[in-house]
Length: 126
Image 1 (cartoon, rainbow, N blue to C red):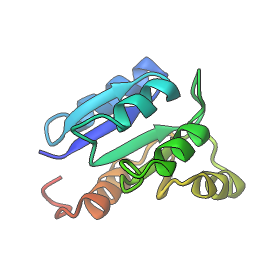
Image 2: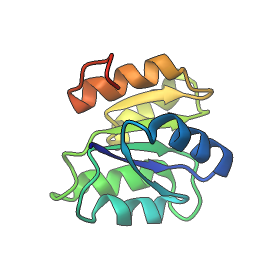
Image 3: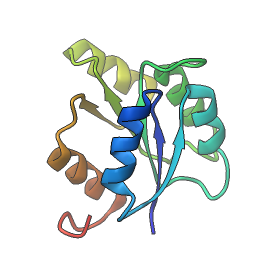
Image 4: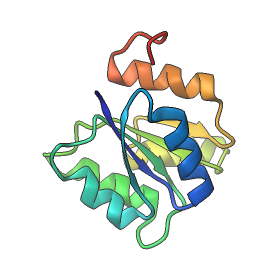
């Protein structure tokens, strides 16, 4: 089963994502950027990271930069999840190392399409 790390500080959002994904994926969660970095760099490594950008301790932009700067974790796809919905925000997320971008509120269909794309799965099975 593929492992997804959810880095989200808002408990309600984190719980919603867990409920949405836990049937199909092994889910690990972190409530701040520092914990997200720590979990991203621990074995077994996550297969994908859903990263909020507005996080306490270390924001999602910096957490992404640190994860992508480490040879052991740089291969992990990171999808930014954020209420920052301007085109400049998406560009900033990609510049920090995010492989893709989803704005909140989440479009569940689009989320599953992106997960399927990055995890190499058939969209119907996710």
